[in-house]
Length: 387
Image 1 (spheres, rainbow, N blue to C red):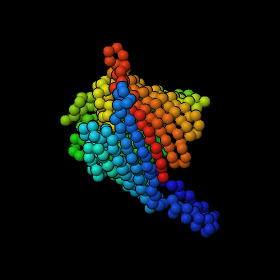
Image 2: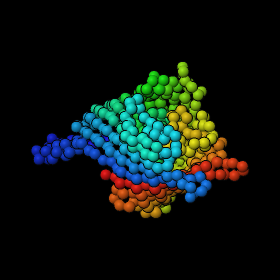
Image 3: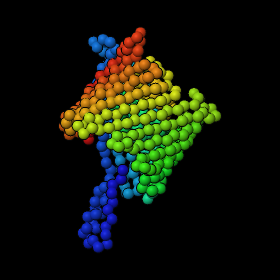
Image 4: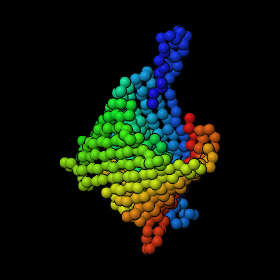
């Protein structure tokens, strides 16, 4: 997060001191980076000749200013141009893909017609102060309390949608965050995120620590008129990674939907031949076990209290790197209670430095009349240039 500052020993001469000072100054500067992506989506149900298309030009600009070793200021903006049949045929498309992630509206639709949407959104706008063991951040930021890969029940501030693969940075939220490092392996994290109304406020206190070679965390707080508490861990069983999270919500005064519990476990393992395997499971008490609206499932942001559409879900994926520039994977989700199946293949190829080409598939099936029938298929071709 911050550049290292080298202490100059008293025995060093003036030349060495000046060189170290110059190096320190170079680390504190204004920087800009980002990317430009082109994503083409083709969707169909049964007949591949009856396609609905959606095209996306996605640009991200990340600005960072670090005047000294205590302060860092960030502004990160994503600009997206959608066009195609999905924009025209899906009601409320603009509100679905450009929903605000905080109390302040930092999103602007420059064009919103029946065939095109051009939106700019600032999903990071923060000031950070670090001094010794203290770390304080104000503004729109990513608060990543999740540990697991697919579902993150502990991530009550910034719940993300696993299917929204094009949003690598994941949502941010308007919040005040104070972190205090008790020891090199333990800390306290306090966060308050105001909502547009008091009923949407979220605030919690988390304690991180390390024990028996595992990283543990536990938290408690308030989530939109619900009392909430949760815990998570990450470690290894021999050479396999082992992670888990659980979060409970109890309605307070004015809370709705009743109590909720979400829990996930995952195990992952990298074989010596380069094959990587992950298996994960989710229990979500408020899951409805129905797969009705695929566009909403794959595009919208989930609620922390209702983290996924299904009550019981299994996920597995196998990935293999054929070379440093070519990787393929095959994943799948299965709803034990909803009898729904989702198949997720992908291929990634690094064309050149800072250029990446992806081919990604998402196929949705449900059990009907004794067999599985397709609900929808989408194929994505994405080209990305980073700078």
